[in-house]
Image (cartoon, rainbow, N blue to C red; front, top):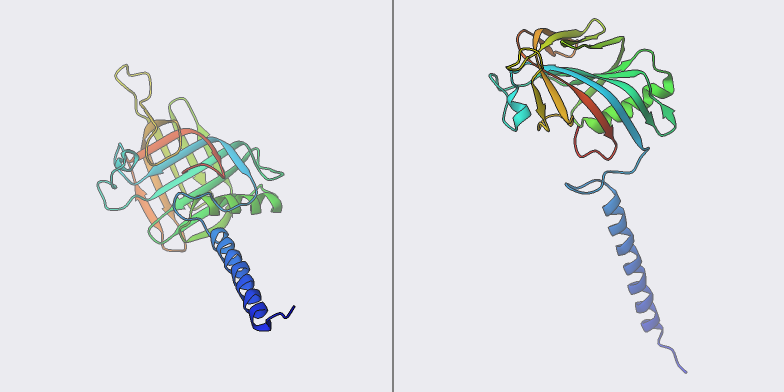
Length: 227
């Protein structure tokens, strides 16, 4: 039986092309996350604890209700998470803090200065997952207090805030907003700042009073829909 060499060559070329095309499609599908797709694979992480936040908007912050900032066109904020229980892969994060300042120029993430090198890298990875904006990292002593009447946060010598919870009609119980649009916290206790100030070397700066504050519980993972 005589075999046509040209026919064999053509079949080999077609088969090779099909393999390359399939590989390219697979690579394209894993190169990044399109809107609504599964997030890129990595270490599984979870952090649960208290979130204390204050921003430059008036009370209540309209960003929490799906609207734009008010009364200004911007909403700058300072917040921290007291990680009461957490991990990044096998690295425990229990008892640490992670803070973030969101300003005009950039985001600054502050890593708890008590963290070990492995814990610091884990917190940086979590921060990068939460925020895709231009960010810088620094180490700082983070003091976060959650009380019955208010909350307080101090991030090194860069910024701080103190807020009183806003009481409802009974003059005893703080006002709570459930399922707000800006923070993934089931119940946000609303507060009003006595002060909110922040300044860094990257050009971010704000100093205001009587602005919005939120206090709530977080339980975030690498699979959370938003933070």
